[in-house]
Amino acid sequence: GESVGLHLPTLSVQEGDNSIINCAYSNSASDYFIWYKQESGKGPQFIIDIRSNMDKRQGQRVTVLLNKTVKHLSLQIAATQPGDSAVYFCAGFLNGGYNKLIFGAGTRLAVHP
Amino acid sequence: DGGITQSPKYLFRKEGQNVTLSCEQNLNHDAMYWYRQDPGQGLRLIYYSQIVNDFQKGDIAEGYSVSREKKESFPLTVTSAQKNPTAFYLCASTLGTGGQPQHFGDGTRLSIL
Image (cartoon, rainbow over all chains, first blue to last red; front, side):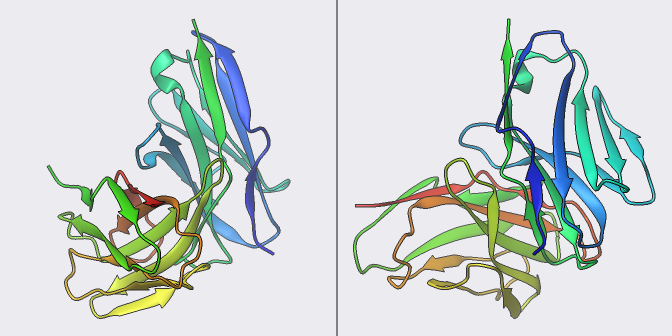
């Protein structure tokens, strides 16, 4: 079946280091992916998105890479700060439809001083 | 400021009772969604609505009902038929239905008394 999944449930980094959060998706076709950040007790917050006609997209301190060959995407956070501590989800619209956004289980990012 | 407002933030349900979770948006978004989040897991789609007076079941619609009488409102009722209702419920909306990021409210946490 269709799926979007993250590789690691928890990632610990030192403040100031770069963080890389990975995500893989199933064989179903997709042309749009989104990364969300969720802090405790709050709803997911949009970070960045990428469409399948792109390999890379950059935002403020964040970069998303999409490798369609191996069906993998990653979120890179530069100079990780304590405020980046949260659960990060990748999500994708699979099978070409835009009604159903499939979420991975999330990676908890812990930033240590 | 535009946004999505969910209320109440915390809700308690007695056995055999129906409860209704409120979701209101002033973003003029066309589509609205309800998700359920269990601890350590991603979001699962309950119901969605692309237009007023129309809605479709998601992956886990059993025991839930919705209505979309107004564009800005999409209430979710958790019925007594939902035997495991304890979860974090998230409402989202999106402009149009052609692959746009979904924007989320801050959720309602439902517990059983």
